[in-house]
Image (cartoon, rainbow, N blue to C red; front, top):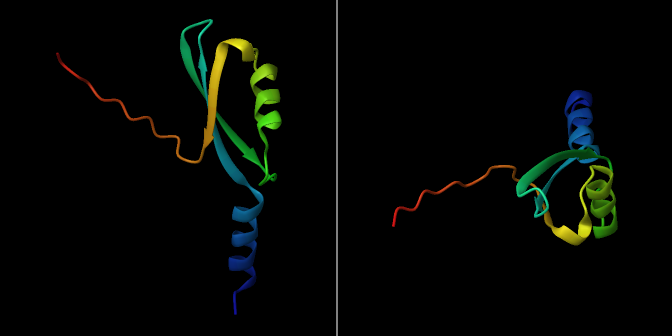
Amino acid sequence: HLTHLATSFLLTIKLNTMIILTVLDFECGRVWQYDIHTDNENMQGEDFEKIIVDQGHNLANCQWMSHSDGRINEVKIEL
């Protein structure tokens, strides 16, 4: 049996889903990462697009993806 503290911890993990939203904004030439904490496990494309627009981006000039790992892999290539 789980203790009350362990049960509360598991519920907190379940209720507070972390989602990274990465936006490539071609208008300003920058990459943006938004760290989203939500109780909504089933966010849809429209939900992410609303966040993107609310943050001032133009959807017509952006590409985006949602993911759970916020690490950025930077690799130098010398030619």
